[in-house]
Every structure is written in structure tokens, then in C-alpha cells.
Amino acid sequence: MNARNGKVLAAVLASVLLAGAAQAGTPERLGTGGNPEGRILVGARSVGLAYSDLGSVKGAEALFGNPAGLALAESGTEVLFSSAKYIADMNLNYIALAQQLGGMGHIGLSVKVLSVGDMIRTTETAPDGTGDIFTPTFTTIGLSYAKSLTERVSFGGTARIISESVLQTSSTGMSFDFGFQYDTGVRGIRLGAAMQNFGPSQLFSGSDFERSALFPEDDPQAANRTVSTSSSEAELPALFAGSATLPLVTGSTNHFDVHALYQSNSFNVDEFRFGAEYGWRQDFMLRAGYKYTSDDNELFGLTYGLGVRLPLGGAKVQLDYAGQQVSDFFDDVHHVGLTFRF
Image (cartoon, rainbow, N blue to C red; front, side, top):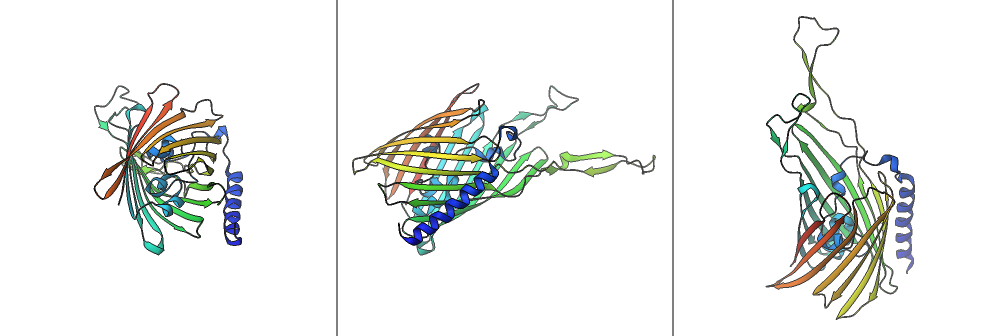
């Protein structure tokens, strides 16, 4: 490790460790943060590894977990499509685009949409339904930039617009992610760290918050006034993660990598993630992962998946599948992804 690489690595690791210690979550904060759907995992390859691969994830796949990996894209242009039938029949769709800018680095664009589906509107006076149907939607749009600072160190960041809408109530805000990756040069070990979901607190408003009221100081014969209110502020669920990737087998025919990650959550208990991937000639991959947490109500634990590279003209196409085992009440969540590299 040369002096420059060492200084960059030390500065980033110190920032992550200090911030994680200051913002660590507790069980008492569970469920009190805003934008929980922003934490839902996307991208079939990384989901199959339980998102333990933040130290080595690359290209368009890296935009959700660690934007620093954008700088290591395998081709000039990458496009990723991912879709999943989430718990309770919700639909989760994701698209990510990575584009090389020559010596200027890489940029990326990502869009995630969670659709809850049609719901029957109920009120206090109509608990069985009013006859109205509504469809809540949750959308995030991210713009990312990444660049290799040295031959071994890359850094990236993402700015996201968060939009949520339920009936006539909505919220629009922003969040920011930062990440880095470091190639140690020792046995192929790669390290990574990511800081996600930093931004102003979430606030809901809209016509559903309007109330008709007559103030004590008003003329009793006057018409009621329309008063607009808003929700209380909800802090975004920030997190800090550190990851390592170790290749156990390398070669042109076979490779086998293991991954480990520690994640500190501001609105949840901390967690550990582990993953392993076997690849044959870079054409066929098998994956498995596991998330460990002290939360007894955690839905997800074991993950599994596979990937196949397909020839398609001048493009390289990769088809990925991942499953998330759900502990109670719901069926497993299944993700399917397609990545095109040009």
C-alpha cells in the first residue's frame, strides 16, 4: 500500500466508524423512521448474496448499495432491469443505467418504484369501505457519480429524490448516499464502505390534512375556516456499512468468492450479512447469503440465487434470479434481473 492509498483509506474508514458509533440504532427506535420502503433491496445478483458484496459490487448493480462500484463498470454502458413480487402482493420494479465518461468518471441513473396495489378506502364512519379505490405509490430517482481516485481506490455518491403518495397526501424529499471501495492488493481482498439515506426529515402534507374549523375568536355566525396542517417530521433511516470480499478460488474456469458485511442502522438493530458466489467460466453463477440480526421479528434471513450470461449480438446479457426466504406469514420474495452491457 503506497502512502497516498493509505491516507485515503484511513480517512474514509475513520469517518465511517465515527459516524456509525454516533448514530447506532436501538430496538426502541424500530419503526419510527421515515421512508422505510427506501431500504427494500433491489438487484437480483446482490440480493442473492444478502447484499454482503459492497466491497466488490460493480457497474449498474452498485447504484443501490455502494455507488463507488459504478467506477468499476465492465463496459461503457450498462442497463439493469429488476422486478420482484414483494410481500403482500406488492410490485417492486427497478431500473439502473451506468455510463462511462472517459477520464471524467462514470454517471448513473436509477429509478425504483414500489406499488402497493389497489386498496379499499375506509374511514371512521365507513369501516367497511367507502366504495373508493386508491393505489399508494413510492418512487425514488437517483443520480450517481463515481470515479477511481487511484488504481485501487474508488469513490462515489448518489443524490435521490423520494416521492410518496397516498390519496391526497404526499411527500417529496431528498437523500444522499456515499461509498468507497479499496483493492488491498493482498490475495484479491477488496474492502468497501457505504453511508446511505442521509438527508432532511420526511414531512407529509396535502388536502387530506385540511380541516374545517371555527376558532374561538371567530364570529359564531361566520363560516368555518379551512385549516391546512402537516404530519410530524420523520428522520430518514440512515445506515453505515463496511464490507470485505475474499476470493478463495481464482482462475479462468472457476472462481469462488466469500463476502462479509457489518451494518449499523440508525432506526434498527445492527446486522451482519454473509454471502458466497461460485462461478464457472464467468457464464454460470450460484449464490447464497444470510442476514443475521438480534431482532426476533426480522422477516428475512436466508437468500439464494443464480446467474447466467447469454450471448446476444454485440451485447453481453446476464440473467439473474434471487430468492429471499421469509420467516412468517408470507411466501418467499423472488427477484428477476436482466443486465445489458454494451
